[in-house]
Image 1 (cartoon, rainbow, N blue to C red):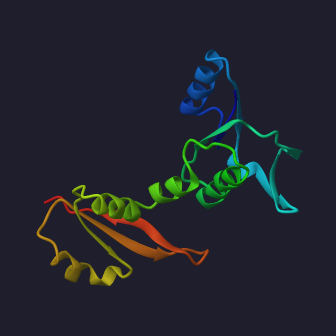
Image 2: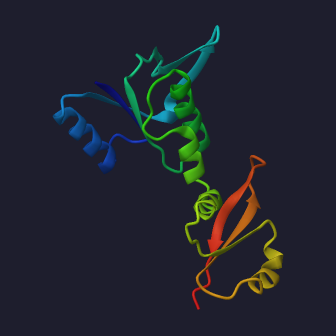
Image 3: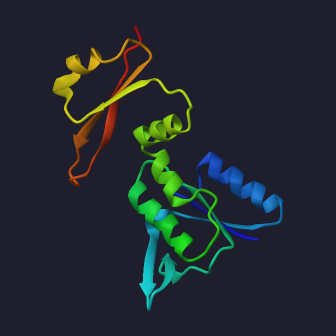
Length: 161
């Protein structure tokens, strides 16, 4: 089987181990940096370029998406999905996993207990928000505006006592 691992660095321990294990099982395993992939739609047909060459369609993709270039990496994973390539971790799952509040919302929707959690756009309301919860454990997320005009959780403050 031809497997493609999407990883920023082929030297990462987890990437090397996955590649070694794939080879030991008789698979052809390649590694591509998702930030160096060029996504192409031509005539409604998706394809991809890596290092200036059209990528031969893998039989499976294993994304190893970290924090760098997450939005673009997710787009690369979504492009493989569009190409009909089986992907171990789908783009929607990666996107959701990168958003801590979305994860907590999914857990709560499934009836799984989560710590009291507050998420606010305005840190100036911290004192008022703290009065809304009984005490630890507590997670407080503050939203901050980024230079790309996206708001997202950028930090956490936790009260432990």
